[in-house]
Image 1 (tube, rainbow, N blue to C red):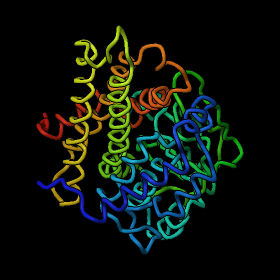
Image 2: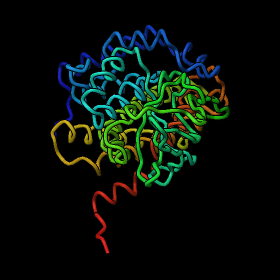
Image 3: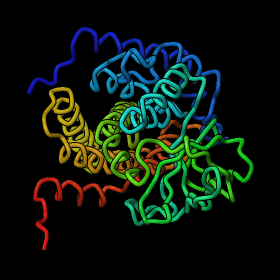
Image 4: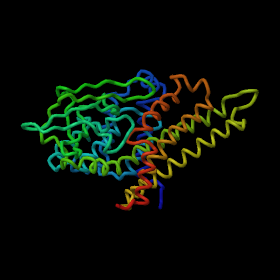
Length: 375
């Protein structure tokens, strides 16, 4: 296994680093997070023009036919800010969801618009808080003359504010789960942003929303299988974003221990501060290596299910814990919303449960490693 980056990947990495340095310096990003202004159309358009939406989508659909690691090195640099907006949720997750399960006609219609940034398609999956799995889908899809009617409430939809349409998971009358594409402007849709210690999250309500039969993605009833297939490819890219965030926190925390002087010496000389920095390093390294191993397996065509679930569990936990240990080092100054650590803390808490908690993915990892027999 060779995890060294290629020349092309290093070029992608430098380009992304230059982009965030110019377009999203930390003092501006902290203000975005303070005001919960995390959908920035101009910034999203600029990222689209650089080809960062749908990087792993084939060129015939408007993508770049890049490898998963190519895409991940870009998102690692975006995570260092952390850059907000639906670059992952639409440009990676929804794009892969359409690529995984939609019909050819649907791919040709949807993917070029997603890759160019003209359409922002956001997944709305669970109805029951942080639960993840088929049991968390309660929204109903009912047959009517000429189509369907959609009823239900998605409690936590990430990046809902910027959506032009939603891919909604709904339970059919026969108990199967379907994925349906719904225009945001359809009558009966309401979006309520959540307040509190999270960011870019809203409740989306579907009240007797009419859905055409042609809006069902792929085979009706196979929605969860399609979603699982897309997640196997999308999750390591999200993990790379979290790795970049952990690296940035480690870097500015280590610098703080060298420059903050207490009792006549840098705080980095104190044993307890060193302990916190060791914890930072351990979580960062764990997240990095399991993430890039999963990416390597995907790019190599090897079985990657267990590694993908492990990466999501470790990276989400790492981001959360790295923020905690950095707060212990920074103390009061780190709780100021003008400090970049607060933007990371909001994002870490939000991503901790996004697309399944670490506990969920640990269980899925064990299922992949040791399949349970029937009976």
